[in-house]
Image 1 (cartoon, one colour):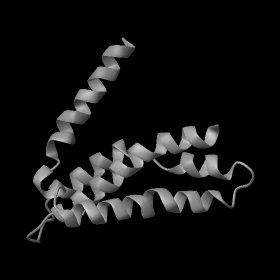
Image 2 (image 1 turned 180 degrees about the vertical axis):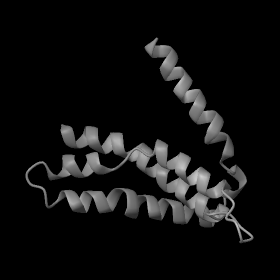
Image 3 (image 1 turned 90 degrees about the horizontal axis):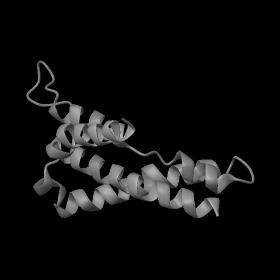
Image 4 (image 1 turned 120 degrees about the vertical axis):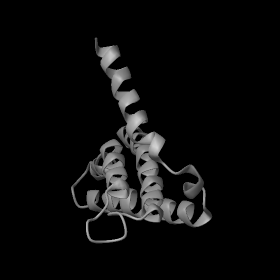
Length: 120
């Protein structure tokens, strides 16, 4: 049953969020650059700096605070597709969504690697 639930969760994620990512917009150099910058600064560096003030296991705690971000993809996707009544646009512009997606990808890739590295 656990395998079926794990598979179903992956399919739910793919069907709701992954298919909504605008690949052509994500590959624009400005989206990649800003996304990687936001990913490194906002999702990684800030948590590592905050971990410095914790104590002897500062790097482990800093790495643990770098969030995973699956839920953040869903929130960003909803903001990208939610129309704001009384305006001509959505809650989030597609350009901001692509930058957010890149930043979340940075967090998803680096968090487990850093956590494992600092646990050694």
